[in-house]
Image (cartoon, rainbow, N blue to C red; front, side, top):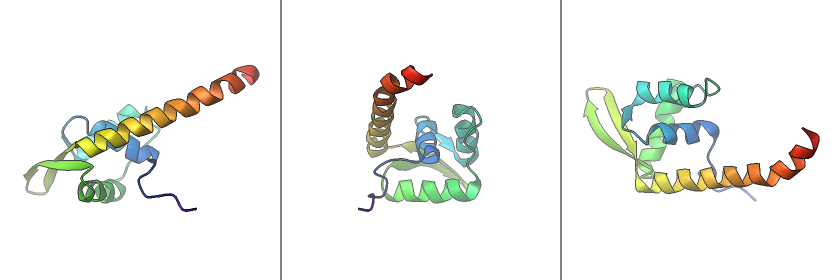
Length: 105
């Protein structure tokens, strides 16, 4: 059975939405994603702007300002719900695995 789009978030999606808990533009989002992930995740412009377009279309984020080519965004209510749901899902995975991994680590 195929997974429904945006049912679970990829790591870049998760970190983009985390970054957008504060209003920021594309360059700031790329920098925040790298900072939030401790350098593990780097989002290039092509990936970022495709995601932002998709998120905006689905009303997951909203445009807050536009000056020339520079656009700023912030997470919308739907995005907050998605981010919270993904956070809870990830916590569940960690909690489920903890008793088993503690035996071998």
